[in-house]
Amino acid sequence: MTSLLTGLLRGTAAGAAGTTALNVATQTDMALRARPASDTPVETVSALVDRVDVAVPGRRRERRHRLEGLGGLAGSATGVAVGAVAGALRSAGVRLPAVLGVPALGAAAMLASDLPTARLGLTDPRRWSSVDWAADVVPHLAYGVATHATLASTFRAEDRERAEHPERFPRPATTGALARAVALGAATGARSTFGSAAIAWRACPDDRGPGRVLAGRFGRGAATLGALGEAAGDKHPAVPPRTAPPGLAPRLTLAAGGADAIARRDGYEVGPGVLVATAAAAGAAFGGVQLRAAAQERFGSDLPGAFAEDALAALLAWWGAGRAR
Image 1 (tube, rainbow, N blue to C red):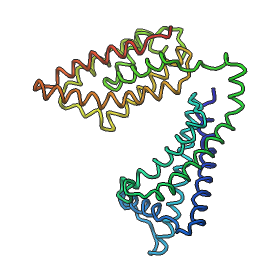
Image 2: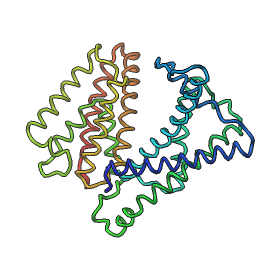
Image 3: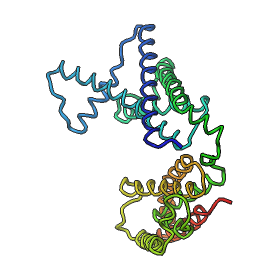
Image 4: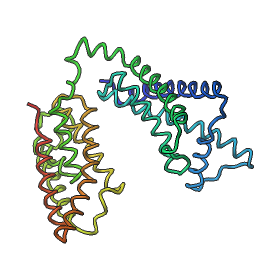
């Protein structure tokens, strides 16, 4: 399987190709309709630098020119970054056919560029006309076509080798493997250490991947103490909210790491399991907050919801860490 770094580099090149295609499509539209260049990139950068209190030097005209340059660079960086992520995912085993990959890449690039402007109040897509939507969608579809085609060409040699010698590569993730990854991710989103503890107790010294380091007494003991400590501390009112970045980031990281460990242990591709586990962790983190709030409203205390969440997280973690049959 291609290394993550190689995937990132290939994705960066693909994102650059996609950004070029997007710019060509946009400039073609400007030439055909005789419309001016959009001021949105400049306004977005201006709003961002004002928000973070960074001074852009120069007089009014010079400052405007610098903001125009920064706006163009920000757009290029967005396209390259989306391509880099796509390359990393492809190196991890996520390979979408063109009919899905092209619109997915275009939508990702469109979201990455339009969401900040909408959040800053510079535009409202709900008020766009059909012409406005077309002017945004078509260039991003061109981005998706070029990026996907470049990615496919750079990974073609590996795909050919995969087809000729499948025994050299991890197996594609099955429905059961993905279901276990979802369960493990959900358990980790609810209790960040439960997934690691379950993997430790299910691990064997001869396992493949990082999970084997937890197979010994020390690994199991440390993971168990961490899980018990979290289960006790979670009930304390002073514990910060799990949906805030300091609480959510470790959950997502541990969910991805746990899914990676069981996929490598069982010989499956890593990428799909990591994706679904991370998404499940995020959903469980927010869903658990709602469960606790519902328990608080019904029973006058969130403890019933907290204990129910403990039990559910433990069951999901134990099943999710199970071995492929």
